[in-house]
Image 1: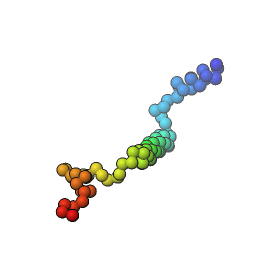
Image 2 (image 1 turned 90 degrees about the horizontal axis):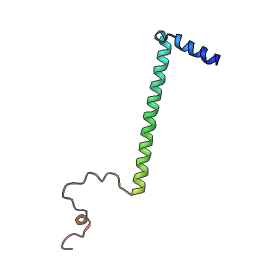
Image 3 (image 1 turned 90 degrees about the vertical axis):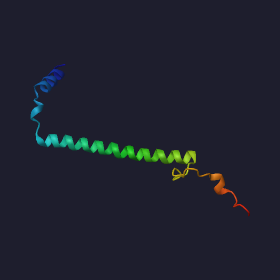
Image 4 (image 1 turned 135 degrees about the horizontal axis):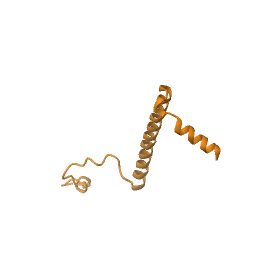
Length: 82
C-alpha cells in the first residue's frame, strides 16, 4: 500500500509541462511510427482481402468499364450471313 501511495504522490507532484524536447520528440516519433505501421498494415490487409474475394467469386479484373448498350451475347455470336 505504501508503494502505491508513493507512486501516486510522485505522479501528482510531477509537473508534466516541463518535459524535455528530447522526450517530446521521442513520443512524437513513436506516434508517427505507430500510425505508419497501422496504415501499411491496413493497406496490406485490404489488398489481401480483395484478392481473396476476387478469387472466391471468380470475378474478372478490369470488367467495370463496359460501354453503355454493349451486349455480351451479341459480341460472342457468330457473324451474320455466315
